[in-house]
Image 1 (cartoon, rainbow, N blue to C red):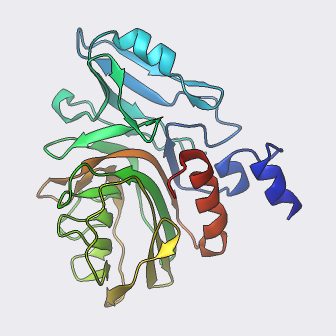
Image 2: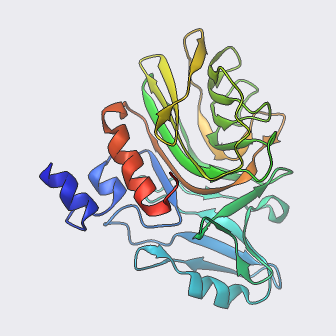
Length: 274
């Protein structure tokens, strides 16, 4: 109990990835690890395509520097920096495929916090190094879609039509997918267009999905054989893309179900989702 109190009241374990270490990747617009001294994002402004690294102030995205750089223009993400110890950054060099964070001089916010918006047409980011998930993995992210029947997912695989996927699909069901014939899907539809905290857990082949800390009733199709993750916001060779805003993604390549309530409490304490 003492270490948990230190976590929530500003002790040594102040940051999510310090209190729950060993994440494969950690992407966020807040600081996730005390020992991380890098930037949060690299942004391209639309006026002249210049780029600038934007860091943190008081453990949050340096919005003042972001707005000063972009001016009255749009700002797009060329790199979202991984705050885990692995430096597995997510990047996009193609201008038309870069997700957006500033619109006409205003930061895009969801529930008062900055968010990265993927347009559902061609926006996505590529990981520096593929992640090869084990039979036990844990994926959590904060996102919001603007309209029902749009795709909302974070980490995914682009290497084949049978790839990793976790999120809310355009049939309004939740999927935790290992490949085309191995997946967990919710038993009912959800037309949510509000900010959500989603958790997907794969524990030795048994998959479970959580929305805002509540288990989503779901059914599993066969036993998962999980393929590589290599992108944020793009699934499969056919180029299916997300149409949503994302604020945070953390992926563990091991079983974190025992820590689920603590991880979700940390995220919710910051984003105030539920």
